[in-house]
Length: 264
Image 1 (cartoon, rainbow, N blue to C red):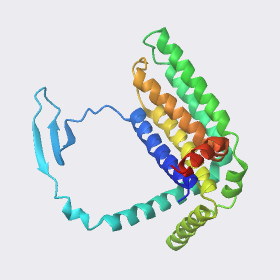
Image 2: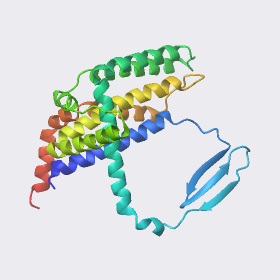
Image 3: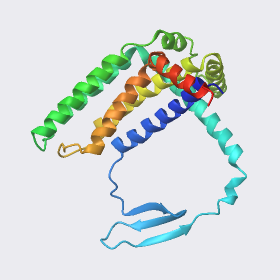
């Protein structure tokens, strides 16, 4: 496997998992349930959160060897499920990609209006909030410029048909084949399109969650939250145009490739 192909795969996987993890940290609500499930040493532990004294019930998980024989089937199922979800997201994006920036701006405006009705802890928090909103505006402005290669692919995405279950199934199968062929024709363009879809729809999802979330006061961001926010913004910027940043990093990639290929 060539070094540029290997680095592309590693970078893409790391970016996707980092975006998912950061999104979970931003939208994860604090648990107020009376019964909380945790996992320790392979056992499910149920903690009673209704009193100050923690009581727990341990349920032993089935031995790992019970699942060992199903590793290949599970991986095949994950790949198939990933292709199916990707095809659906790609179809959704193809219907609204021209209005993504407008939709994001509308949702951001609603969030700004909602946030102004909530008191701020201090002036520093207000400054952080203003800086955050300016960052979102810049991100939305960046998303309004769609790479030509992405537009050419999106225009070829077949539309979903819901006339019957058979037509819906045919659309899903056809879209999965479309993504599979796109990946083998040009992996870089395929990754660029998929990242663009994930970034755009993920940002809309984040704004929607922010709109329905309730808060009583704006609190200051700690160091970890600030770092996570910066990383998320960088990933959004890179994910919005992977092909551009990949070509921009060509001198660095060439130097790394030469270093690996240099005889020791």
